[in-house]
Length: 326
Image (tube, rainbow, N blue to C red):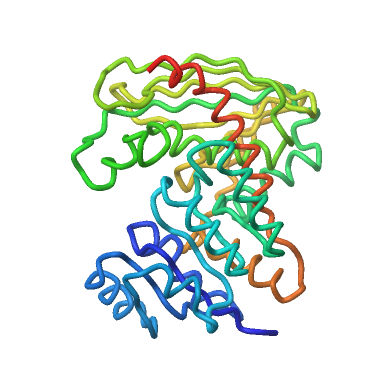
């Protein structure tokens, strides 16, 4: 098996634990070089993670003949540009989510990758995590009978938009939207993984608290091509922190959290079973492993540009009217 040599563009918070170590801990994988516009921070990251090379220019990663694939770990507003440049250099791409600022950008990224004969994967890493694979297994094995509807709920307190973590995530010019756009895409990608494409959406989005420019309240109903119905409510200006998805079938229910590492609960009649599946320490590692395996001709990564673009389409349907009026 060939060792895949990775180059990483961006060394922010997501790369410290969630993703970065996965590239050098996965089998037949090596993190060969990292880039950040601030060279001192790139150098520091490389030293702490034992990465051989660091750069302050993305082209040094993209055009390096000793780099086999590129991980784009920057803010959403740069994904499209970096992906097109990687595709032109014929480098396989693993791009952070949200995939692009718009559905149109996602389609252009897919087109560029296809035109240059390179694969494009997107960091919807939950598709490879044991906890979510268990949810899929339960559904497919008929543990709750025929699925009728799925409901998602998110309630959070107002965030401090002055902190680095939330500043760009609440700026539509950098993230593509508000906290819903930046975070709820994980939920919709997982629903796509479980039930197939969403084909119809009805939604209302608003900014109630005026704490930042993007949406802070979204309510929606949607229909999957498979026949399952869905509904959701996301409010980012409440007095509590709560997030849960519930899949309701003819013989039972499954509850799971998208963002938190638990719980995963199977309920049938009066029976309540906590399945207690924990996430690995580096949550990107399983999907990184699937990419490395695919590049070595073994299996396929479950999160592609095409599947991620479907989620981008759903998000655009939900927020299009809101941003058209703002």
